[in-house]
Length: 212
Ligand code: SF4
Image (cartoon, rainbow, N blue to C red):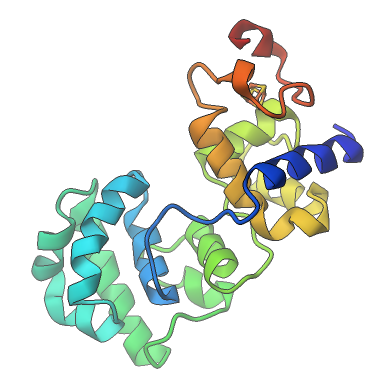
């Protein structure tokens, strides 16, 4: 795909949604970090249901740590993998209190050293909480990047690196939100809605004719 097409794609996605953000509910970097840890293999809607009850009661590392693993499980037991997520969140809260003065660190290395935090979670926090140019490639972004030809790659790291290199700078900060939302609602895994897609004429997906 050439540069001009990429510019046109992101211009249209931006025009359709000028201020995109995550669909996870949060009001601080710490709440975002916890919500993203909880969101692995779970829906944002499901995570929001749990955190809407949890955060009014506990939304600091000290307060969640004080709940303990069993106390935290009561709030998150509707979310997949809640046992291991509860363990990770409590360990993460302890490290934040002991090593980071109860603040969410702004460095990738420090974020990735927290239990339950991998590269993708670190990228979401760096981008959405701190405004860094970072690309959190999830299943939606991976699919959309490959289908459209915006940034094809064999694995998520390859797609991340290509997106960071190929997405025009003016769109880089918000690109991951646009791509996630496009993948979640239009370029869905099964039966993409190509007939209703605002970038259909620019998309290089060979099978798109089957879905028009
Ligand atoms: S045309 Fe179809 S395959 Fe291409 S981005 Fe749109 S929904 Fe996805």
